[in-house]
Image (cartoon, rainbow, N blue to C red):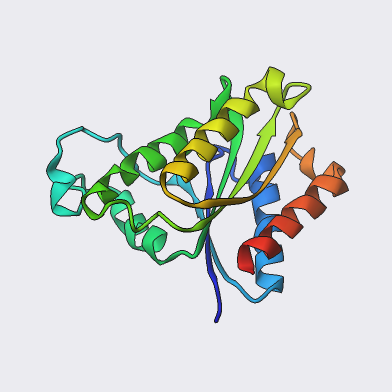
Length: 184
């Protein structure tokens, strides 16, 4: 059975380092036979949750680009969350998307629960702790525990300038391997 992997790219730069690593993960997943779709979140109109509680009926009432993402999230066997670290955690683009998963509460989160998750992070500081990348990892790990989901792997690195990811073949290999693990 072919696995379906959804990659959510949270970088405002379409060719930013986290996006490049996400593309490498997609390549790895495809090499293992998975069907992969990558979504560039910055290019979408995703508005914040209004806390209206209308989603108790099972769907969000905000008519924006998130409406098209809901069935893709539900259909995915695995989800890779890729983001640069901005101000000590993942990007606003990724946060907006994840916040809107609240619409799944009416079904006890089944659309995003019991799945494989992968994490890809790029940061400009010297390490995971100084950059705040550890905060993003803790947040996603906590989310996955709540959703009874597995974090299959984490790829992260100090990558400040556009093009830095390609200068680190070790990280590119890690991203490829993450994609393969997601597809298994």
